[in-house]
Image (cartoon, rainbow, N blue to C red):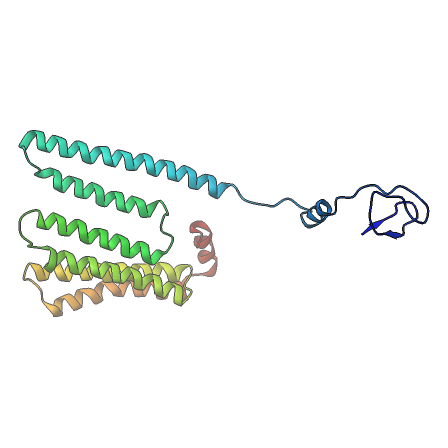
Length: 239
């Protein structure tokens, strides 16, 4: 529907004389006016994340090519010297395991749970391969397997507690140190068990003694530390 620009009445179509004043009505592009009326302002977008992603992709591709060259070179040197693959199996397995960690570090997996499980599986494959290359499994199942499984479970549990309880600030650091202490005692238990030196009572006492300072520090920070010091530390470390 068009309007006469002279007398203002509605007319059936544009680009024709007005029936009232005979003024010639100019042609109007209604679709263009509708688009302009909808898009009054330009679409805002932050180009920095996309630019950063492109840069990271290029760096990761370059590092992946270096890893591929290193693996091929190590295999070639080993085979040239020994007419078979000996030490290169250990080296290349470690290089590939490091490449997997690099893949997770570049943000290609967004879920923190998937990152933890992926790194845990990567450690399983690495340690299993290093043990089996000797011709027999000696230390993987009694030592490496429970340690990696425990570290994975503790990491997932820590992140789940942080999210479920909405833990922030100093409490987050306290929970982190508690998880580190539990993990260290878990590792210590299986190392002593592998060496046939495990004493459950002594292990329990040492665990309590290591957890006690962390608990005391958390209690002091929660109830004894002045609020102004808390605020300074929070601003300093962005807690």
